[in-house]
Image 1 (tube, protein in one colour):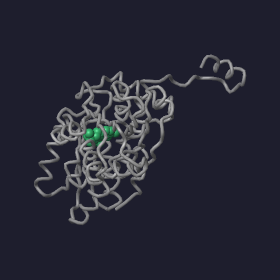
Image 2 (tube, protein in one colour; image 1 turned 120 degrees about the vertical axis):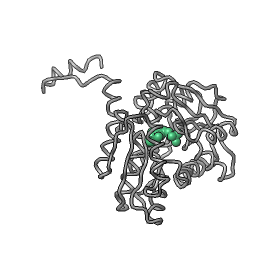
Image 3 (cartoon, helix red, strand yellow; image 1 turned 135 degrees about the vertical axis):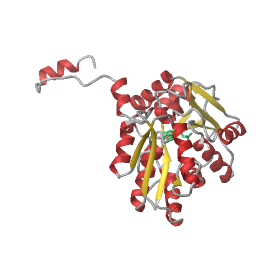
Length: 308
Ligand code: F0G
């Protein structure tokens, strides 16, 4: 079961490197088949569901797990049930799940409540849970750490990433550990307002992997960094405008973390860009200037363009 996930680009962020006095790289997990890092683990979780002859996969999701699960299940010929917090999923993610035929249910409640319900259904044996509590998910996600070491020739000094439920933080910890060449300092960015942040993908109040994620972070000598929405949006804008990397707000938590941490100058830092900006067009609408209306006349256009 594959759609060609993984082997994502690792690009140098030249202008951000200069501003921070660091050697910053961006791992574009947004370039996976459904435009988020979830595909690395979903390929295995859905393959295993097929192997185990499960008919229906289920997940609770803030959107990306749903888009990935629905897409891989469609390819495998399995049905998908998605439980998502009502009104809290970005437009593009919902479109992805609907387009591939998933049954999307809006739960009157938050992500944590939706996840509890999904776990109960899975425990009955009727549905395969493909949230990151499914151990195959982390096995897939850890491969991103392998790619980073292979490409840089050594583990970076610092790894910065968003921290929602903590599964991805845990997966990188496992990956660097298994590779055996040392673990970077892990800096995990969580929203100050976990229950209501603009970064809807990480709108999670009870991180299910907290214990293991904290262990990975602390074991690396790193830290959990609390981020305001303003800090996340400033990083989101900088990635887009200064590096040409359009990501969703949650993904910018990685750069926001670097911007507000005291890191030894010259360090090699990798920011994980977890999801694509096209998933969340409403943030663009709210945070940027609208198009200017002009007549199709060169003079009018040139005049309107002055000062932009
Ligand atoms: N970045 C993005 C774009 C995400 O979608 C998520 C989680 C995270 C970061 C945080 O990763 O939970 O492993 O710490 N999204 C989940 C979902 C919750 O349902 O799509 P984490």
